[in-house]
Length: 290
Ligand code: SF4
Image 1 (cartoon, helix red, strand yellow):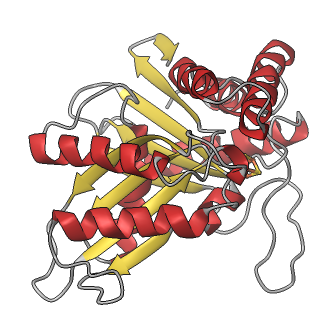
Image 2 (cartoon, helix red, strand yellow):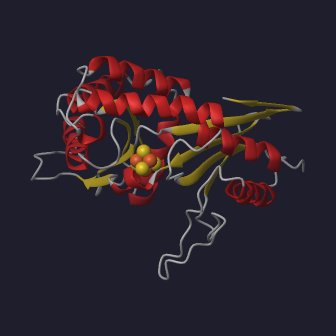
């Protein structure tokens, strides 16, 4: 199998240092919505200056370079074990080059591995079969602060008056945003998974964040709910970095899965403004990045 280590290293560099244009555009729109001279306005101005500088200098967008989460869609010709070795090799190289901060610590001893490699779960690599001959590798760098404010609700929830329906989903999502205020580095993005079990719910709530920020949900009802949650979250007044203001959530994506009759989980992954996501696509000999 071809060695993709250098190409994967470039994917990591890009993801750590170059915020996607669509995220930057949303931050600019958020800046325009905040009052001139307010703390919210100043925070967004600083964030946007930082985005320009890190892209130019090829340095990390945030000091927390996050948990590397890979979603790989691979044709049968790709040896998954070999690709895993290459991904881990690229992570180690990226750490040596300071595109990533050494972020993997042993859970009990607290000892840092020094190279961002831990057990089979660090970095996280999800594989799925490709529908064509294309190999695609999506990478999200998920910051710890925003990961800490992710939440999972088991509905019904009496405290929130949230039943097992879309209104219950809306109530759970807004509760998670309310509880996250001042933490998780707003304005951010919400990935919401309805259904599944506890484990698949969390994985799906991250995977759905990889959708194009400007796309629409194919399910009209979920599309409407995505817009409503974003609008209502912004009416909470939490604002950038919790300073108060209009921009709290820049976008919401929802996925619905099957579930057991006994369970109804709503899982919310919160992604901070440093929404670092890029994709590498291999078609034959050609390699592109998005
Ligand atoms: S939550 Fe995001 S922006 Fe905040 S410190 Fe972590 S990675 Fe950086």
